[in-house]
Image (cartoon, rainbow, N blue to C red; front, side, top):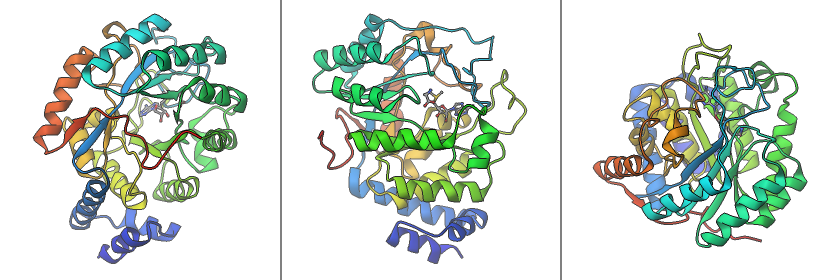
Length: 350
Ligand code: SAM
């Protein structure tokens, strides 16, 4: 019974808030499969059976923020904090380059121990040694001037999930010094500067309703990001949300398909969190319209310390093992990991 609505989304790439709510509330196995197939076809029209890989380097788990859902929040005294040096980061890039990675994602908590200058210095070193690679930063909220400096230093992509487009829900998920307005300001600045920008949210975040998800879709339609990162919320034992239920595989896959139909060209990862709630989560994500995977390149010694949620997969493995495993998993479902920067179609540096 949702097919007319799904066809409308497929054709117009947008629905109204009430239509999104209906699509979410009335979901059922038959229509889900109908939409999943359309979304997978849509991704294949743009990207074929090619899957882009991004080497994720989790270079610090220090964080000044206290997001209620996150395992590396500042008040989690049990988190075993670490920072990688520039040399260690470069060593991760070298290993990744050898596996065919042409994008490195530098992610951390909001660690002011890494000043804008330090980050620029790291970016410049990667840029010099790997001129054919894309550099993505994911280091949280900073000033416009800092973002401009990152771009000039050679970074060209930035991941900053908006987390939720609802002011009320934002306030429930974050301490009061963090505001949705500043998140949105950051995303605007990043886009203005010329970055390929990734926004996104957690599916099944505590307190999230289908109305909130509809707001997320409408905000994304307005922002037009180049990348969208979504994954299930997964509880962490040392956070205030330790007893909250996790987001589901089913709802996350459903949202991935909606996003693919909204944004045929968007870079859409099947996230580690998705792979954590289900052993075949990432494969199912690709079959629901995702076209990117982001395995960790972080050194084995620190992998088990960058714990945003409980049960995170691949914390005991070497980067090489993860890469081989993912290559096989993708081959098995008829996809191929490619050696490519995997920019947003048509994007060039201004
Ligand atoms: N500090 C940077 C930032 O805020 O953008 C980058 C790191 S932050 C830990 C990356 C993302 O992890 C967040 O945007 C959030 O959506 C996700 N995350 C944090 N805790 C999570 C949890 N418990 N379950 C699922 N995802 C989570």
